[in-house]
Length: 228
Image 1 (cartoon, helix red, strand yellow):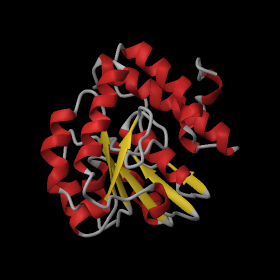
Image 2 (tube, helix red, strand yellow):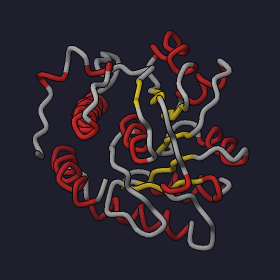
Image 3 (tube, one colour):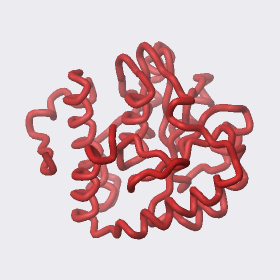
């Protein structure tokens, strides 16, 4: 996805949450600075084919492990990686904004497994603290703002839907979604709004791919895409 295609959705997200684009850009530039003398991954360095499991971190992931096992590749969001690894399911890429389990991300990079490390306006300190401890040769630096030569933007907002956009950008033929739950009464208001945006962005992605994601069955007809 070109940034020009992503930008209207991004601007709608900024307006909804009151986030500052300048803060995202500062975070992006911090991440770019940390990569300046390194050789991080680019999107062309990650290739998927066949069915890719885009794993969310909802409690339902435990019951969906066979879906992940049956996929040709696994892209997992945040703490979903820990659940999968504990169950013996290999992860091919982790997507994280570094807010929960940076030690897992560190271990993956040291083993050569790609980690899409995301910088946004609220996690600059985590970026500064954690990213230098990773093996940069396995880090894919990402932003939700305009990309730079070393920091890419495949699209997406939350860890989960960014994982889906990343899988799409890297060639997945089919996407499946173990461990997803849009309706979680235990989350706070802001997280609930983020899940609403994840739902919207997945609906947009399935339209772009001319695919129907099972995770949206029974929901897609009421999903609005206000930036289109």
